[in-house]
Length: 267
Image (cartoon, rainbow, N blue to C red; front, side):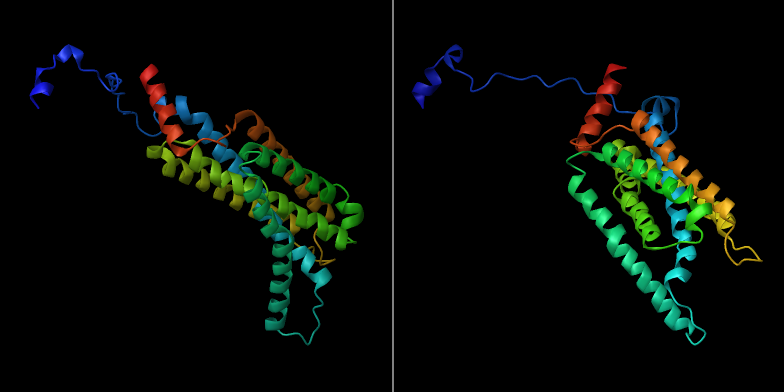
């Protein structure tokens, strides 16, 4: 012990050099929807809300299109009661989900960290647009009287690429893109705007698909216009995704906080 005490301080080697802590970054103080918030996150919030709005316009309209398909594949005999008819409709919807909706989700799970959220969203919007153009443009001249297996295949693809596309990614991106103190609020705003799109799409497509009194079928001209509009909506979503949506693949939630702190420290 005495030898240790006799060693001068200059001869004591440090195990590691002293590291000074960096200066503390200022705590962010700007509120939600302030000028500073809009300057830093306004574009992100706009593109998340807009793409969610557009995909819900299309997705909920597609669900209403099922009513035009049931009577072609389900024999509604006079002796069939309401319970049997409901069972047949439920079976039809289950087949549709198993063949398109559920596989779309699982394909997204497999590819989302391989090709990224933005590319999946762009692919989904693109192929949904192609499907609606393929259904809508010839609807008046062919599909209105020939809803067959080919029509069902195209209709199923719209749900597949909705789930392997914007119907999944629009829910994921807002949860990863914003800092923690704004994350849930911005996600809620984007989701609320999406439900406005669902209402608009439902009302608009209900108008287009209502049956005529004389024929008992929807007006083919209105259906053509409605389906082509859905295709155009998908193309608008594709452009918004390409030009405005930032990729979050490979970034942890903590990376958003570091990026935000660097912005604050440098301004």
